[in-house]
Image (tube, rainbow, N blue to C red):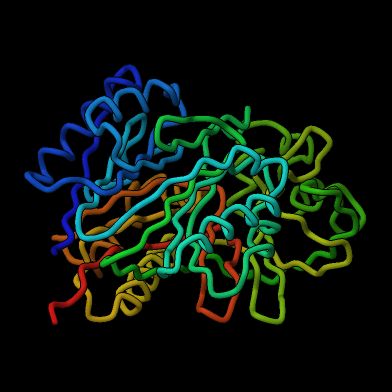
Length: 386
C-alpha cells in the first residue's frame, strides 16, 4: 500500500480556528486516504487546549502528537502565529503515549518508553516531543537501551516565561513528553547537522550547578561574553541580549566529536540557563554560526536522511530546527527550508518547527544523542515495490 501525506497551515486569532483550518486543508489534500498519524506544530501564543479541540474535531481518534514552537515551517517557508498539521496515511500503525512525568525524571520516562516498546515483537521507531525548559533530555537519552530507534525534539515557546506545551491524543500539558510508536510498512530516514564553527576563543567552565552555568574562567558567564562582544555584562540579563546568547553556543570536545551546548537565556545574576548539564573543569570553545554554513548543514541533513531512506520513495519531511536558526536567519526567513527542499525536490511535503534541542540515533550500536543548535530532517518513505 502506498504512503500518502499532506500538510496544512493556517493563521487565525484563536488556536481552535487555526487548528480547524490547518486540519481541514491537510485532509482535503489527502483526499480519500485515511490518516494514520497526525503531527501538529502550533504557535506557543495559542492555548494548547484550543488548538487540540480544533484539530481533533476533524480528526476524531487519529493518533496525534504535537508541540509548541515560536513559528511553524512548511514548504513555502516560515509561518509565525500559526498551526501546521502534517498527516501520514498508509500501511503502518501508530500508537501514541502521554508521559507527564518527563520533567521530574528523564530516567523513569525512558524506562516507560522501553517498557512500551518491549510489549511488542515488531521493530518500532519512536518519534517524540518533550518540554524544552524542564526535564533532562541527556539523562533521558542515556537511560534508553541500545538499538532503540528514537528521534525527537524539545518544544519551544516563550523564552522569558518558559511557556511551552506538548499535545497527544486528547491531552495537552507542559513538563511532559508525547511519543508516537511507529511500525509496519513505513521507512524512516534521519539526518542532522549544525552550522556553527569554533572561532578560537576558549573558556574553562569553573562553576556549574544543574542547568545553570555560573562562571567561565572564574567570572560570571555574562562577563566572559561581555568582554568578547563589547556589551556591558548587566545588559546580557535583559532582552534582546538575554536570548541572543543562544546564537553563541559553546562547543566541547568529547571522544565521539564536538558537543554543542547553547544557553536558553541569561539570568539576572549573569549565569547561563542551559537545558543540559555541563561539568566543571571542561574546556569550551565559542561557536559562531552563519547563513551559508546553516544552509550547507540543512542540505547535509537532508542528504543524510535520503541516504538512510535507501530505495524508499520520500513522502513527507519533518524538519526540526533549533530556535537559534530562527534568530540567525531573521533577514532570510525560511532559508533552511529552501535548502532542504533543494535536496528533496518540490514534490515532498514539508512540515516542521523551531525547537530547544534535538535527539537523533546515529546507528543501531549507539544510544540516542541529545543535541543543541542542530537541524534534523526526518523523511518518511514508501517502500519500493517488490
